[in-house]
Amino acid sequence: MHLDHDHHHGPVALSADAHRPDGSRRALRIGLGGPVGSGKTATVAALCRALRTELSLAVVTNDIYTREDAEFLLREAVLPPERITAVETGACPHTAIRDDISANLEAVEDLEDEAGPLDLILVESGGDNLTATFSKGLVDAQIFVIDVAGGDDIPRKGGPGVTTADLLVVNKTDLAPYVGSDLARMAADAKAQRAELPVVFQSLRSGTGVADVAAWVRERLAAWTA
Ligand SMILES: Nc1nc2c(ncn2[C@@H]2O[C@H](COP(=O)(O)OP(=O)(O)O)[C@@H](O)[C@H]2O)c(=O)[nH]1
Ligand SMILES: [Mg+2]
View (cartoon, helix red, strand yellow):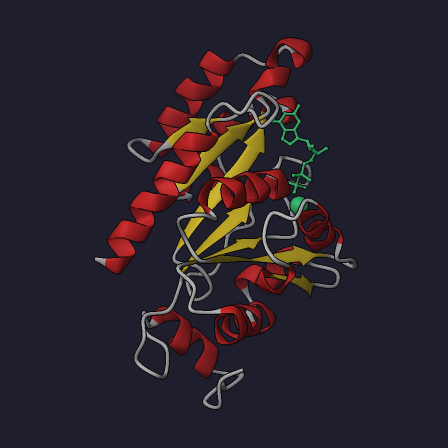
């Protein structure tokens, strides 16, 4: 934790600033939100595998009462253990990424202090419903992950995650034939909700789309360091 850490104002002000107290540029922070089971942890794992040789990166997971997601990432060895931190959020996962972000800010700052210098920190939310989004004081950009098995009407239903996330990932396209989800309809509905904001259709089973998500992250990082 930084010495100037102040539980009322310090973390947000520090976070919005692109520099750390020593003047170096802090890591780009990207949040991954979306319903429980849509594939956030699996996407984090895929991004780590795609980017870890070219970037210095770390991950913060948010679980309600456990450290399951962090333990999964550790078991899969997607990154060295000192680059993975779990925040236990208690009852309301959205609170920890939107309202009282202090535990998450502490986690990202500690990672930079202890495992840094870092280019990128991925923050996975505890998983909530369609209304959960990250505070701009915690992350610089956010990815919202939904899946085709959750129903092909989700893009049409909207909500801030679907309509405003910097990137929408529609995951598990491999399951579409089994659950009767119409991918063309999902694409059209997402386009109607998001206009020019990007959408990637992904299947971690077949590996489709991961390269597009990784390319989007690289673009954000290039803009961040420019
Ligand atoms: N068939 C299929 N299963 C997936 C895909 N992505 C993730 N899963 C599975 O969906 C389940 C939930 O994924 P997880 O990443 O833990 O979801 P989270 O709760 O959003 O973090 C796990 O059993 C994953 O293996 C995919 O693209 N296709
Ligand atoms: Mg997860």
